[in-house]
Image (cartoon, rainbow, N blue to C red):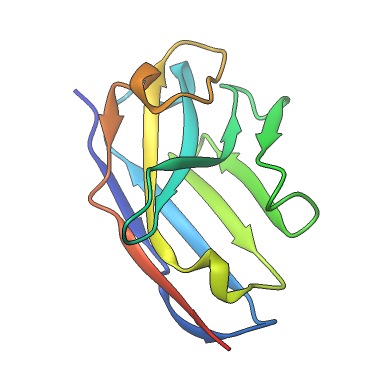
Length: 124
């Protein structure tokens, strides 16, 4: 069983930055690929970024490429999402997800565990 707890969300002006963290329980953190997803009001959940078990392979949605960076620290059992140059359209609840396996996927249905979400609001 894996429990995920996100933190770091908040209110920021357009152009600003936030760093989301996702702390995991369990002894096999390094065996899980991780993903960050988001869901805005009235919209479907979408993948933002994903990272494989070692951190050596990553994926970014086109809308965040060059602005967001996903990383992980297996010793701290934490995955991060550094968000720079934030835009109002980035406003959403951001969720951390984990799947048992070394490779990441971009479909939410492939993930086994989810955090409770953290709100990110970007004002114009």
